[in-house]
View 1: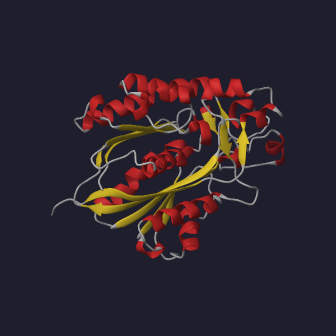
View 2: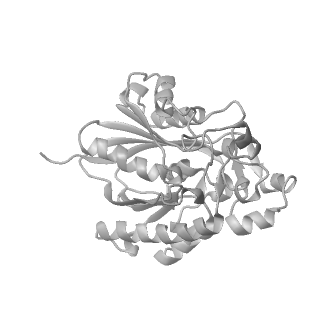
View 3: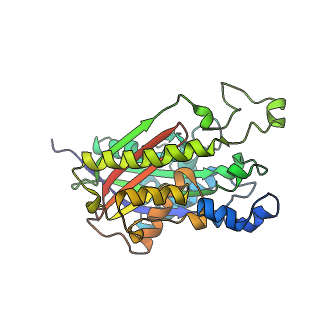
Length: 329
């Protein structure tokens, strides 16, 4: 039996209307537009309203993806949501999204591994198609990270943002998935985590008073880790696919910090126009960042049939991953 390939047939994206600029942060924190821009590359980010949840953003992104290929929600056989900010501890946000779209009886589940979520999710969703279990799967990276930000903490508040990107994967005679490299090291979760609210440390009144419901990060250590793992994972994925740096048409990295992206691009000897960066507009949208960037590139007509794309990211866990992907029309 000939193995089934997989390809992406549509991408939809959505970000909240509310925009937070660097100047907005300068009004409440000891910071400035110059400070934030020089250290992160970020100028603006989009934050959800108080009454907007992750599923709200995911549903809009999913609808836009479906519209591009004239499919109905029930044409999708399985829904996967990659998120670190689910609507609830349970049920899965994917089941909520599927039901709201009108596909309540479809299988649906979440992938929770922080900013690496889309990379991991793309491998999981692609595997379901390539194994012949489903002919069509939707993967959505969606986040409302503003909900877990401490607005008084300059080291995290200015970085994270909200958004959603949805991709529809279909069975294909030509396989887009050329190779992948995934990894995780949970020996030091405190490098990037939310201290309270889980079974390790349930939320208490004292925890709330100490702001333990918000994300905490050791920035310098995460920065060094990110640069190393993005480069290493990309190198391994290229080697597995028998590709070289010269074969890369586009690098679509997780949008966490422009200095991290620049370091990876320099190592790969990629010209700036082949590295897709939108961090100045959206900040770090975690699992949503790569599909949002992919959707923008497709809508701008940048990506063509046959192009080799490297998706690469890192996140809490600590986790990392890279995928070599050939664009198939």
